[in-house]
Image (tube, rainbow over the protein chains, first blue to last red):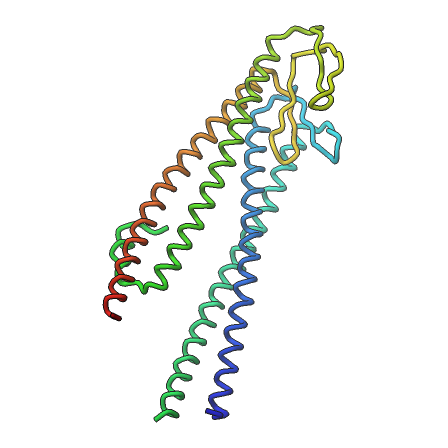
Amino acid sequence: MADPKLKALEQSLQAEADGLKSLEREGQRAQQAQQQFIQQQNENQMVLKELETLEDDNGVYKLVGPVLIKQDLVEARSNVKKRLELISGELSRIDSQLKNLSKEGQRKQQQGMKLQQELQRLQQSSRQ
Amino acid sequence: MTSKEPQTIDLKTIEPQQLNGLREQLEAEMQNLSASATALQSAAGQFGSSGRAIERLAQQEAGQPMLMPLTSSLYIPATLDSTANVLIDIGASYYVERSPPDGAEYCKRKVNMLKDQLDQIGQAMRDKQRVLQQVTAVLQQKLAASRAQQS
């Protein structure tokens, strides 16, 4: 059983599993961020739609800390639009990050499976 | 989720362990959906009561004496200055002035939107429930079969 080859295999299998776990954690973090941005995107889209329906004589205010500050309607629209652009930029960044992570994860999983088969083969042959 | 038919066919070929995982995943999704439904319901309730409050406010006239709540149990005398505009929180810390009918209309629109989404969630929950039942049934069959084999 103290076959050095076996031990090395077990170690690299463990390393693969650890790598996979940290990948999963990273993926979860990215997904959380994605959720948050999607929520913000929805909210800002709703705000923009609402601002589009306003006339010039409707006052627009922005809550800054505890006070409401009067805003120019045109400026408010362009601010929300800018924010939406920012958010969709972040979303596409996270999207590609998630794609990379899942590709990396699949690669690691296959690698792990290969190692496991190798390990089983070795164990069987050492038993015989 | 993918369409249901291939899933139904696939279920019998899946390992019990994976089936169990699938079941847990479905249950978690159901819980998420029902939490969202509760949140939407309460939001719809709030928009509804805001809309009614605006309608009542619009019926009042300027100069109307009233008691204004400072806390839930402390009121001070006040007079209504104007009912020409109400200030509406449209999200992302933006507030807009609108006439009372427009404000009430906004609330109604929100309530309708939320109701639509609630309908969608209800449909999704029914679908998930059905899949969950199928998965549970197949899982039990498999477990029973493996138990019969062992004994």
